[in-house]
Image: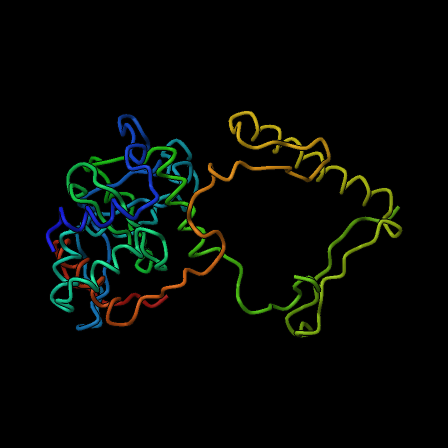
Length: 188
Length: 114
């Protein structure tokens, strides 16, 4: 399946308003819904059981206030990030593993409809987002703020796009625990 | 007047039988009443501020209740529900490999033990 064909599947099934997803990135501070394409960050290699230092496309999760250089306070020099996988890279690996076109079509449709946990679809945008991308929430990591020096964001989410992504992020990380915890209210 | 202090049992004594007991109005001291009134006032202020830029939400005059939210405004994402489809181990591996494909390896390191 080619990236344009995959995009057609995603576009047809996603409830997103694609035209409202990205906004103006000029003058936005680090953390204000920005996406970068080459940020120094860790990636765990299951083969070597070592962390690799890579430069990769990322979405910045940290709130801009928490890394504002104007706020001279401890602990504001690390940034939470999440890898962004350009759609062609995902298609290549998925097709190699499962050449079944119908299986891929079904998977993409489920991702677009938010039926798949821990994966968020980003519609087409500039640069590496040309054909769209997938945000893989299982690989949230942290990197030093100096990794962003000399790097320019390739895209910024709009208020609408940020709300969509935040809702998926919140649902993944902050949804109520399935198990009943100690000291929970009686009729929880 | 007694101070309003929340007390939590220590880990040594906490168990699955420990439950939160909601205080009843009848047991509130004056100070506790003021505390809850402040919480309600804060919630109303937040709701009022929220309604200022969110015209699709109708705020009730009764503290703590939002009467109606335009469903079309809500995100289609399943709120607070585990998505029905979970990735298999093989699919996670596909994602890991796709991340590597879209990254440039700069160096290999070792764990830092924290």
